Amino acid sequence: MKNIAVIGTGYVGLVTGTCLAETGNNVICVDIDANKIANLKRGKITIYEPQLDVYFERNLKQDRLHFTTDLAEAVAKSQLIFLALPTPPGEDGSADLSYVLGVAEQIGHLLKTEYKIIIDKSTVPVGTAERVHKAIAANSKAEFDVVSNPEFLREGFAVEDFMKPDRVVIGTSSSKARKEIEELYLPFVRQGNPILFMDERSAELTKYAANSFLATKISFMNEMANLCELLGADVDQVRIGIGSDARIGKRFLFPGIGYGGSCFPKDVQALVKSASDVKYDFKILKSVMEVNEKQKTALLPKIQKFFGNDLKGKKIAIWGLAFKPDTDDIREAPSLYIIEALLNEGAEITAFDPEAMQKVKSILGKKIKFAENQYDVLTGADALVICTEWAAFRNPDFQKMLDQIGQKVIFDGRNLYANEQMKKLGFAYYSIGRKTVKKSK
Ligand SMILES: NC(=O)c1ccc[n+]([C@@H]2O[C@H](COP(=O)([O-])OP(=O)(O)OC[C@H]3O[C@@H](n4cnc5c(N)ncnc54)[C@H](O)[C@@H]3O)[C@@H](O)[C@H]2O)c1
Image 1 (cartoon, rainbow, N blue to C red):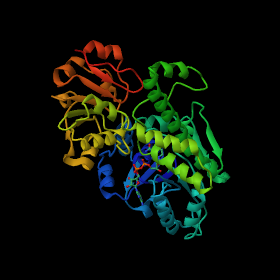
Image 2 (cartoon, rainbow, N blue to C red; image 1 turned 30 degrees about the vertical axis):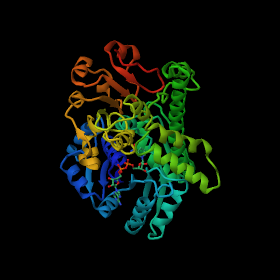
Image 3 (cartoon, rainbow, N blue to C red; image 1 turned 135 degrees about the vertical axis):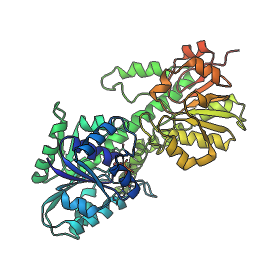
Image 4 (tube, rainbow, N blue to C red; image 1 turned 60 degrees about the horizontal axis):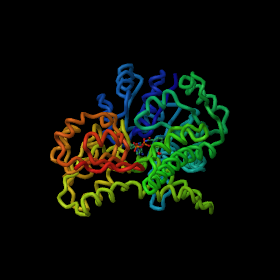
């Protein structure tokens, strides 16, 4: 059992804190958002993440999971202090380190004599562990280590990924810190997945390398899909054809309307900036960003063409707002880009998402309408646009859809259905990288 503080109780912080409590540790999560902490204290979970509620409730009940706005209390009570703070893009694209370094400075004032380990879970540029060390040391004479421990969890699978990680990356040059952290993570790697120890800089870069590689794979397939449309090939066939090559692998090959979320867009951008700071022109990643920007609205020209470039007053139903299924996260969600483009063209939007509607309401207000369920949203619609591949959209009640929808037209940004099936049902069906199913007469 270890006493642990987690500073920043967002997606990463809350999952980290809860999962570390689940393995028997005593955890105190800190946030400056008093409202969030008040909700968590009364047992109200603040994000949607499968399984998290079960672990959260159990550990609250067992008194292993605590919440506070008081950093001093959390630091005093803990030997291990995790930083799970935001690192949003700054104006020049680099990661904004003000949250991380600000808290580091505060920690410096709070460290007394007892040895503590500060563990950075935020995604941060190379050299940040040294900067955090300096920021703490400027205000403290206490013995401490700063460790880089990038987080690789996927939203929607966050608990599963945290409890059974493919690997744990630990960047440290301190043998004392290494021993403590190895003990902490051993319960999570019982199946033999590795805890990889390396230097701080390599650990920091590993996180950016992983996200940038995955973003590259997605953008590559999106470009391949666009080419398939022009050459009359089917991207699904090409995907299966290349994915069975073990060197390529089957995952992350699905084309769509681009990647979003709080990580890929900002991390690719930050790595390009880090590279340019050391006079390296990271050409591939610049293209990845460019391709993704364009791909977010790849459905728009198809919609415009279908309606003869006149979308004024057209009723468009949207399925899916979250940037991916099984999360309520809408940061950089492609849906928001499509909605904005459609609104600019004068379309009227009604949307449905199983988890993310509240968050979209808070930013779009009354600009769009929302429906109670995936069928109501179709009532009288001139077209359905699919932005997120929620499981409930994969095998819907097609008869109910046909009964509700005004015009039988689907623009599918996630390639959920087979063309033959759409043809049989009489839908006009536009997807990504595949042939179009024309409207039946
Ligand atoms: N979301 C993911 O899937 C994911 C995955 C891996 C890594 N990361 C990285 O982890 C970090 C955190 O990401 P997130 O998605 O959890 O962010 P988030 O925005 O969901 O949460 C950050 C939390 O920190 C709090 N906070 C801000 N300033 C604070 C302060 N001074 N003291 C205490 N709390 C403070 C905020 O109120 C918020 O609750 C980022 O660097 C991100 O890139 C995120």
